[in-house]
Length: 171
Image (cartoon, rainbow, N blue to C red):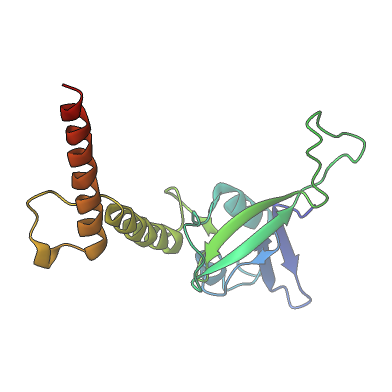
């Protein structure tokens, strides 16, 4: 199992931080404020600063994109304990999807700014695609309506007409 935070200090007293094996970028605030060296901060204060930050949960995956990266975190398991369901995964893991510029550690909010912006954009695109699967209003202008929505509207109207004909023949 990977440690949640890993602080590596080299011979020249420069430090590198990784979160579940994901190395933080050089432009992270925690690196830039301390000039990436323990000359400028004590190790205990650096650890306190790291522990006060939140870990970005990444983005929800609607569809694969070249803008996101898969991040797997292996979990430790007890091989002697298997659920009654028989659901034993040979490689138990926690899965994250992150943007390339995900800061992984952030101070406040629910996600880092990069993942938040990507999530917002992909959610808008996902909602727009879902709207294409709904029939258009009956009196929508044809020139401004997607062909798929017009097709769905026609199918819906034909179905209603067929139901009305079916009801009329029973009287």
